[in-house]
Image 1 (cartoon, one colour):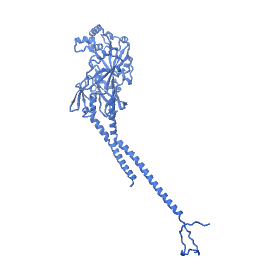
Image 2: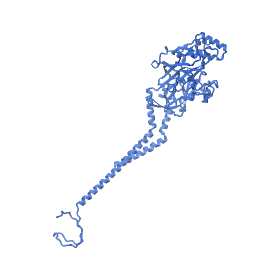
Image 3: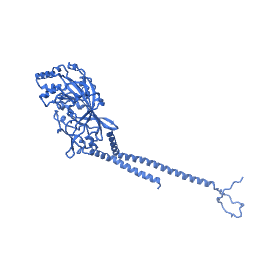
Length: 530
């Protein structure tokens, strides 16, 4: 057997083995199952690894942008006209949110943690100086007092109204951005505080929220089921709330939005419990996106999250008291926030009933600027970009006994909205790309084997064809040589014709005997004589 034949047989054997093994692994999905099992095991909070550290102290910088609606025509609104507002901002703060007091519970299946948030102003990302810039907006303490007086008699309400007027306060106030956000001593609350010490005399949208947390959380670690990774078990000791009018609405579902289970698919709904909204919301798949070279799924709240109960009966439980419902795109949260009739929505009433948008001049809702979304890496479940947007509004309406409200039209009045953003940092993105490359290579290893087998099969076909061609060339060379030898022999040999006549006497050499009969004689060819 020649070397060429040995190479062909060896290539054929290796090719057959690669194809058989590769196809068997692809069909059995051994490597995919192994990777998925490993991910399910490692993506738990009990793993002393980079995943746990990133959960404990998230590396991506989080920014909180505050936008305010400055009222440009307060007098016209008080006379019954349409309010006009102008958006100012952003005023941006870096948000630090490390988890503290971490304690593992129930053999590592659950974990207790606090999540305090600290805010530091970032001037280079802001539109101005919050300590200098002035805004005119609704006097929320004033509206809160009016709202509390609804249950009192007309005479009491009139007396309270006259007293607040004597303090020089009205339905609108003018304050610096810093005061409105982080607190100031309010004259109305100061008077109430003197009579009821449990009422704070300071007011601010973020008053006492810098350096504090939103409650005590207990999370599932995913040890028992990877699908429970990061889900909230209890919040402030509660497994469900009591504010809303149905069990479904009171459920605490999903995670806090910081982590999700691995191996996310496009068809599932992801749930987030938003403490500032006093409820859980769900997000649905929107599209595939790419962030810093990482493929991700974008999830966003669908329109049915804040849809009117008439269009989505599942939202009836958010009407408190039962039957007292608002329209599409808004949610009254005053049930969990004592005082003013607070309503939340998406910025500029995005996805809300047009009547709320048209009630105020200066609003321009659009998806790019006002949609809330999460970009999740589906293999690991890690958020690589997030944008949480929510708007704070207050219900402005006529209240008997308060003359300043005599002519106003009931309006859900926009106060401000926040844009909380986070994007994976470059170092974490590089590590993520490396991890995903390894996962991809290992998961597709059987396909690589099949591909190598196909390449060797092509090599085998080429070698076989060349070997056959070589043999044909050898046969042609042998035939040519044989033909050439035969032709040469014919040229060097003479054939004497056989005569059928009787022998005639002839001269013969003396030393050559006579022969009787006819015969064929072969002799060297001699030159012919002319």
